[in-house]
Image 1 (cartoon, rainbow, N blue to C red):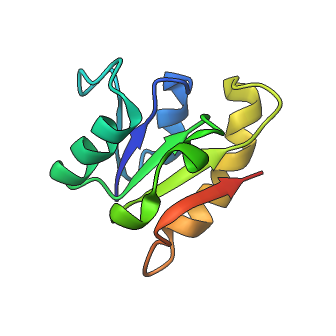
Image 2: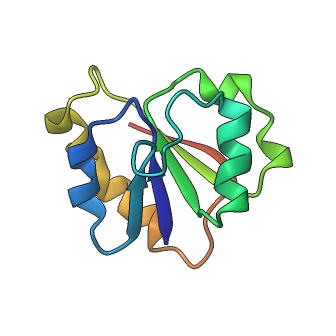
Length: 107
């Protein structure tokens, strides 16, 4: 799978998904892109999913018009120590034959 870590996540989280093609927003030089523009870039560049800490994203975007999965990681803080605990749950979704489209909140 081809995954993108949003700029609000620790870069170290890439290590949790080394079996996938995983990039950060910085890797792609997409820092500061608005959510709609970022979603379009994800689709144009054949990404399968976005991982983000932006809990408002699911309310700001109409995911029905995008053919991509957005994993919204929900934790008390966006530190690696907290978010790495959610990685196995994300991996369970990634192991499925077909990813759900739209936002998936991971708690």
